[in-house]
Amino acid sequence: MSLEVKDIMGHVAIAVLRDASFAEIVAAMERFAVGAVTVIDADRRPVGVVSEDDLILKEAGAAAYCAPLFESRAQRQERRKAAGVTAGQLMTSPPITVTPRTPVREAAQLMHVKRVKQLPVIDPATGRIVGTLHQRDVLRVFTRPVQELEADVRAALPEPGTFAIDIDGGVVTIRGVVEWRSQALSVIERLWLIDGVVDVKSEVAFEKDDLLAVPAE
Image 1 (spheres, rainbow, N blue to C red):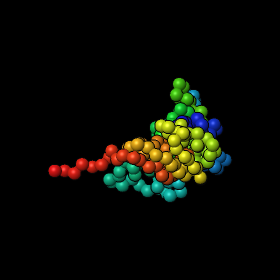
Image 2 (image 1 turned 90 degrees about the vertical axis):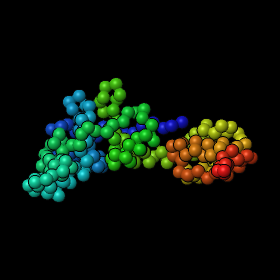
Image 3 (image 1 turned 180 degrees about the horizontal axis):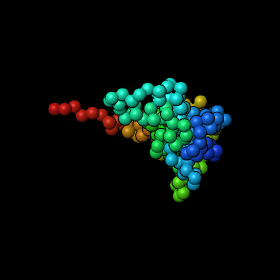
Image 4 (image 1 turned 180 degrees about the vertical axis):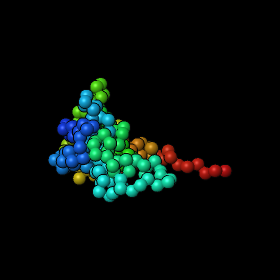
């Protein structure tokens, strides 16, 4: 069974309004020990995100320099943020969001690709923020109870009773015999897709090799 965001998310929506001051944003980050806050409108819908990277531009002095003759879009955005004093001026928009039913694996991929440490979780019907997903929440999949992880492993196997399974620290060792080599590879692929699996050590033997390459004539 694939875990969803709702299974691991934090139900505290760490957010500020557009007109929140620079100092209020910093205070919110310190209070909740986070590296970013979601910016919401009056109806609690996310409109952007302010991260520590956005705030540090102020101390870096990027706003103190005159605009160069040729300025890239990224440089112009950095100067604008460095000069900002409210959340609306500092935020990166639009925000990257997920819903409670988003698979955890998909959320983790978003974090990695977009280089973000947390994601606002929104109600798909209203668009309002209902929580926050942090990187540390995603890592909790690797602390799942062994019994729970084993149940998912066995559910993923075509014939659970024909395999022996050992799980130690999230590392799954599987033993058994299947008819075809492709079946053995399929079993390994299925196990890698289970949330919380750290590694798969296969000792699955096969009787026939259906993946032999045919030499070119």
